[in-house]
Image (cartoon, rainbow, N blue to C red):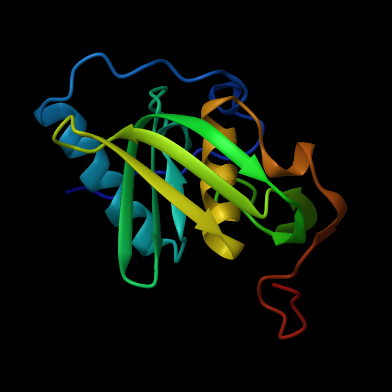
Amino acid sequence: MALRNIVTEGDEILEKKAKKVETINERIHMILDDMLETMHASNGIGIAAPQIGVLRRMFLVELDDRLIEMINPEILETSGVQVGEEGCLSVPGCIGTVERPAYIRMAGLDRNGERFEVEGTELLAVALAHEYDHLEGILFVQKAKDIIEVDEASDDQRV
């Protein structure tokens, strides 16, 4: 595993639609492992391949000691609405209020090429939708209202 640099807002790769993963092999496994290490080092709960400069359709979400690795994800169903504050590893120092689905159901492939589905509500739904947007070339700030800059050294942060 290797720690990768996180691509930040302004880099063109974050604006492009990621390409389908055609073959799941050791290289894809290595990228997934690197994404996990990079996400952990950055205290994130999710990361998409474009955020480390890899324009492929895959992301990770880790909540409550549950790691979800999604390759070639597709949204099958959404319902309801929830509104909350979000931040992003690729947009450091900013948070904003974003409207997301209250429920989401997605399908994709795991690292062994097996198809699976995942359902999420609350923070899991937010994280899945947020990471999926990265694969579509969309940053949360494009959907956010009330975007504010936070001083990362300040104790007065809204997170």
